[in-house]
Amino acid sequence: MAMNSSQVKAQHLQQQNNMAGPGGTGWPRRNSQNSTPTTTVAEPQFPTTTGAINRIIKLYPLTNYIFGTKEPLFERDPSVPARFQRMRDEFEKIGMRRSVEGVLLVHEHGLPHVLLLQLGTTFFKLPGGELNPGEDEVEGLKRLLTETLGRLDGVKQEWHVEDIIGNWWRPNFEPPQYPYIPSHITKPKEHKRLFLVQLQDTALFGVPKNYKIVAAPLFELYDNSQGYGPIISSLPQALCSHQMVF
Image 1 (tube, rainbow, N blue to C red):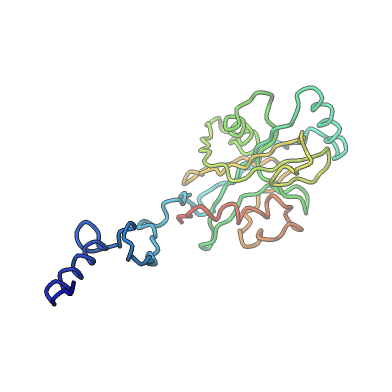
Image 2 (cartoon, helix red, strand yellow):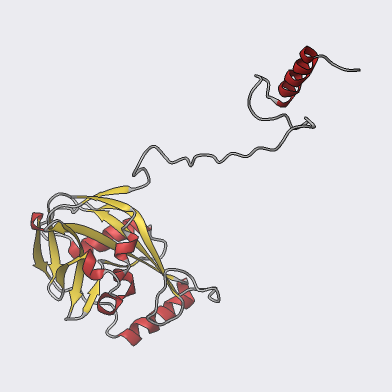
């Protein structure tokens, strides 16, 4: 039966309503036979806040700190082979060695520097050392920092240990260390953890006579494992997630 123009118009409107959403507009209904799939590209969503994941570390001028001297602090082992022999002997008794080191930051000329201990002319190290069996990592680091850089006038030094910024493993009784456990190693011989230490605005440190304290700029450490070793030269990358406030 033929339809007049009013009936055709009414049928067309009914088809449009069937394709529309509940409000008469929007996406086509999926059960509509005449619907045509439609795609849109969503606008990318970005966080409205910035710097939320950055940790803040305050850096004070190097000139705020006084470095005195105290009695020499000698290593427990007279040579590198003796150190690894002791590590081998202790591994059989107490298992993997645990050690901790502190990263102490200052600034000079508006540039961040790391405080390092220098032994001789070419050897640099972070303050820290071995933990005792069962010793808490943070409390052990505070003990080691006091032994290494603690003042001599009887005033207790306050150490504010912050984030863990590095983990290094020694797979064998040998010098190489890695920031991961190699897949073929089931029993690493040493685990070393690096902690960021927030310094006070002023402090007095006691440096052992057989060491020198060195403030090394981050730009000099970067990609310089030949001069500072793989752990110290990795500090610029390890610290990049922190916001440094001068």
